[in-house]
Length: 277
Length: 322
Image (cartoon, rainbow over all chains, first blue to last red; front, side, top):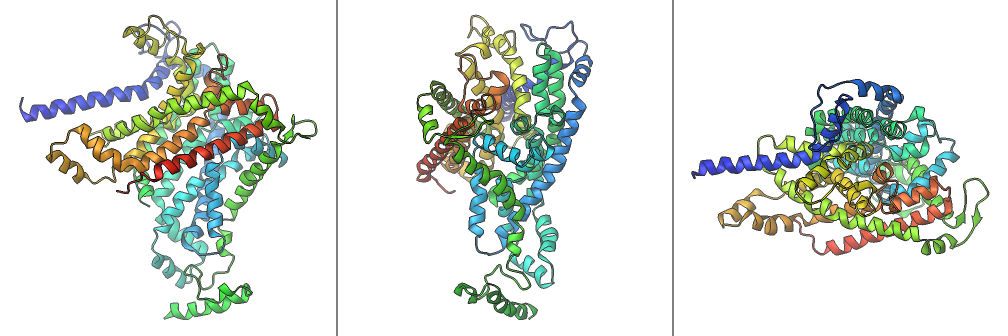
């Protein structure tokens, strides 16, 4: 065997292995996709599995779309993402700037308090936070869903890390030019942190789009449900109809998957930056 | 020059505002600036601090208070002292939940601490299209646990693909209804939870692997070290700090499993998938046993802190900085 042939054989073997593993991760979604488009006459489950819909039909997508107020849920999720992601990034960045670039009394205390929230497990906070939100009259409102999600220790930590890397001279130069702190924040710090902002935006989008437990606890009125909660509602309503549940689930994950595929090159870059930071 | 003049103003301005402390008479701290008011650094974190106060500190205090009361959310709370904690000691379902959560912890260890390292080594190779594979392995992470739960219900179906594979290879004589079987339901959920998060752990290891200088591997290759030896003697020792991180994350995640249980089994069959997280939620929001739920929440919280500390102590000594 020539070395060249050995090289190509090894490479082919590697791709077979990579593809087999990819099937493990994508397989369950493919099964979902296949069930969503199978015509009524074709069994969803069979030995051996019959994956290709013959012919693909849109019946179940339409059914899922009308069984529950699907467009409302999608719109709700768009609103939650549209409000929460930018606001949580701004709140994090505002908090991170002085922590990274100013000295003041209580700085470590603030940083420690923020970091401690990472060690307050969500499950434990669920009930007391719900009680506080109810006391404030925010139960069953959009604000009740949104406000508690705006503080992110991860976001503050990552941005503080990034802001620390901005050279002091640049900031001092801006200050001697008479720049107001808020303008420095906006025109110097934020542009310098672009890769980190991108990664926070991506993770924020994904986590808000998929949010489930907190909205479930806070909301009674299903008209305010985000899409993930809508899907669990659909699972309860249709129950028996496996095809339309599959169709509803496929539509719910499509936006976030497409978003991720477009943005994915930023993820590893941002992560590398964060680790180096 | 301008800088110098402006800086000389700062020390005189500072003591005037908060004069009584001796500290302020010293030269300006590097971060304190001309024209910057003493409260400027506090204005920026204000929104975050308000959110912290309302949605973290206040609920945390509420939880501690509530754990000493008996409260059904309607009538007046009744002070019961340590009653909730005593009750918890004798509650079989609490111990079942704790036991199941620990089974998740053990079961998810290989799936989230070991396998992702191997995956990271695999996708750290320089191959055309490797980024596509990374993205595919990461796909379950970006989808909601609800959608993942639904998808896996299809996989676990009696006539589903998993039964087809296992009976086809002769592992099983006949198909199993995994989610309805008290023996198989928990392993099935462990698999789903592990599968969903594997991508995150892979990415953490990948970031770690990319800090290892490639010439180490080249030197080892020249010396005739096999792929296994390179993994064992270069990769693993240098990746230990990252293992400390993934281990802590794995523990936190495993002890808080909730959504997969809620979507797929509701704690059944026969409490075989009743996790601590699900039991706490059910006590609070299904039985309105608020004080008891808070007490269990506190116990879970203490457990998590203890585990994180233990993990820190154990891995600290072994940390190698590359």
